[in-house]
Image 1: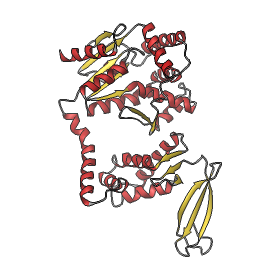
Image 2 (image 1 turned 60 degrees about the vertical axis):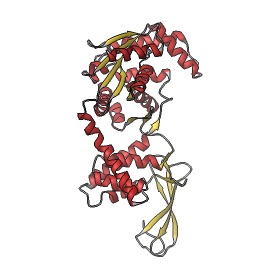
Image 3 (image 1 turned 90 degrees about the vertical axis):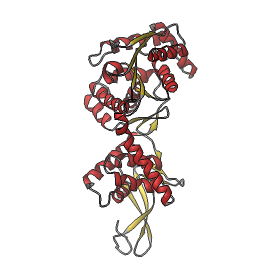
Image 4 (image 1 turned 180 degrees about the vertical axis):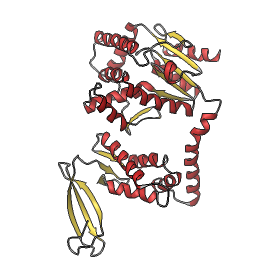
Length: 376
């Protein structure tokens, strides 16, 4: 931006924030030549995401500033400008998908690190050394070793004989998630909530107002979707949605999107990648029949529709929701029908899976049953 006082080309932004309506950015600039300050207003097509800095300052997301940081990290590395532009676009899309007015700068930093570590290891470590604020040479060496070990671990894990998968399938309300979490805890391995992944996609489709039958809209949405787990917390595009995806409406939408080929293909790829890196417990409707056909242990949990409806009713009531038992029962029966009659990977028991009817069993009894079966 040219200085209006001396026409010098080099000016720097010292403050940046959106106007009240969010459709203009007010930037306070300083000329590198005459040191005078001036203000500019730039129009934007969409409301601006505000970045909260570590020191508490707020500034509008600046695409050029983000790109500049990535360019510095990639200096003299075999990374093209096209690749950098693509990284910036993906990060910007993820930020917009959050549908949040403010995000912490740490989240942006994590997004950059995730992008860089798939492109160039040196650029990744360069950026991390600044982002993580390594204070001295020894600390730098230790932290770099951790970063390298973290990236190398997945490939090593794939070849370890002790990596195994436990697949737990069954209809909704059979207690799969609760049991899977408990078994994972008992074994000291990770639990991957695949149902939460489909719920997350269903939730995102709901808040975006996307009809699952609109193939193109769903595909576009999926291209900008990232789902991860952080100590039991479900992260959708970097935002904790653990509580938001457990409503009855999201449950119904999850079943609808789960029948779509594009959704299942994307999420199954995510699940397989996770399960090949480390030992995991996964629960869902087609883990043993599709995601991990060669899983070391397979279980199929079930319970009567009435018992499953009661469990769901009690769970939602405990959360303070106004729910009706008959409606929940009807929803479960409809979902059972959809899940068992969908064309792509319908709900069914794998031939080599152990079936466990949980109708008259408590959580600990079911978990112990599975543990005993695995110990046989």
